[in-house]
Image 1 (tube, helix red, strand yellow):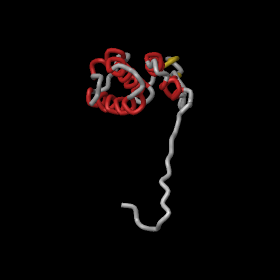
Image 2: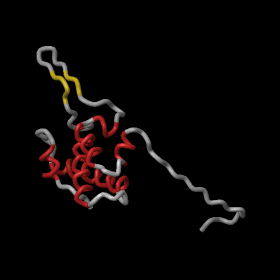
Image 3: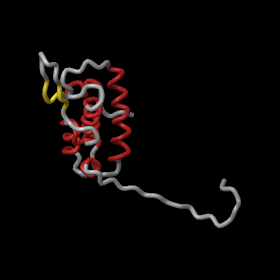
Image 4: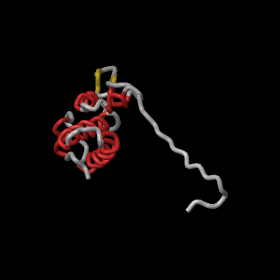
Length: 130
């Protein structure tokens, strides 16, 4: 179940025109990300709620409502902030989420320091596994 709300996300986004149902979809995705990444890392529910809000805004700002770093007129030029593939560090919202995470898990993800675990189950007979 999501921790943050549409209104909380709208309060930090710059004048969003997205409908509530679209923002709710992003909230659901952010909730899964925050739950999977930060559960058991010593963060309070309140802090995970705040991080989820900022992660939602980050997801929106790097997909549907990219932030302009430079705009133009006559020559119709626009330059967006962030870089593709830069992860959470590519938006101010993602940077805030990293700063709020005292476990440094999001910082490690942003820096590409992901960990993976694999396990093998050894079977020495040919009987099918049930």
